[in-house]
Image (cartoon, rainbow, N blue to C red; front, side, top):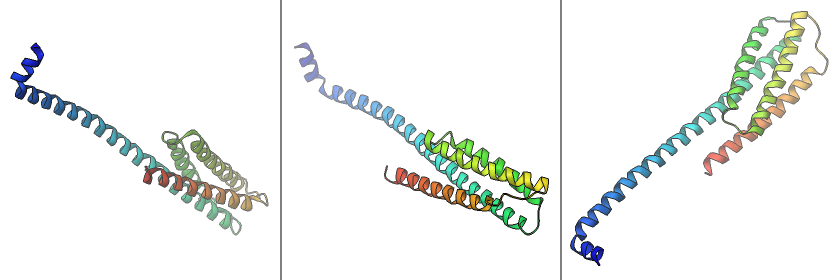
Length: 167
């Protein structure tokens, strides 16, 4: 009975105390949720930026390589070696950076894309440095792998889009 009488006698103070406790709890929970929301938005932004950068670097690097192969058929040009090596380094760094954000399956496929590019560009560099001839099927192989890689990147972009707009 003591609690009931105290509650009846001091009902206004109890109401203010409960309101104060509710306010403090709401501030604490809002802070935690806001902090998570900011983390997720930064993580998502960095993930998308990293993937876009990888796609752009792959596209630029493959264009450099296609140019180099097409011009080599006419006149061997060693000036592309430096461009290809720079593109290799940038693409490798972007592929490595993707491992921070992507799941294991997608990241391994991106590493496969980088590895294929490295193999063909190293072949180009070796042939140019030796003044040799390319294997006859190298252009076809380059075009096939480029087409497969572009299809993979387009599929991954759709997955990104679906994941972020339907969430």
